[in-house]
Length: 240
Image (cartoon, rainbow, N blue to C red; front, top):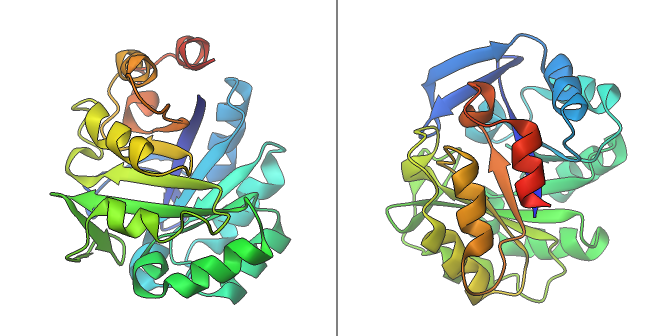
């Protein structure tokens, strides 16, 4: 299982929010690049970056901070937030992003995702953000009538490298993973599933790994990592 420490960007800073609400932002580092270096030093092999402002605006807002992260670390970076066109995807791949995350466009214009995955095999991830059983879009500011599995299955044979499934109801709350939400998705599709939203302790990682069924390929670590509830070395040992 791969662990992805999250760097969420708001107004150029590294923050954590609750339920995706930008008004709840807590700043953890004024330098996202320094934060990325710290996670690499702690032993992580990937960095998960989200442009929160961009997700709402529908275009890159924190591009400078993203570029600083890319220049600061040599580990692969996956990036989401406001990436809505093939041109956007191409820009970030050329800038050095290893995996581009598409969320809103996966719901509104799935052909863009399919074309991107064809152009950049295994370098495209689909973000499926779930609130009360339905998929949310536009930086989680709007809900749809679609369930997560319906959206995910659109890309079953498209060459998508990963599905990032976020439990919005638990995101930033430290309530613990809803293991069955992530497990049900892993069972439903062949695309590797990365779990996000609610992780509270290394016990959540252990429960994900112990679950019977298709394995969950990865987990995003957020607030619990920043506030010290998760020890990086212990988490990485459990995930290995």
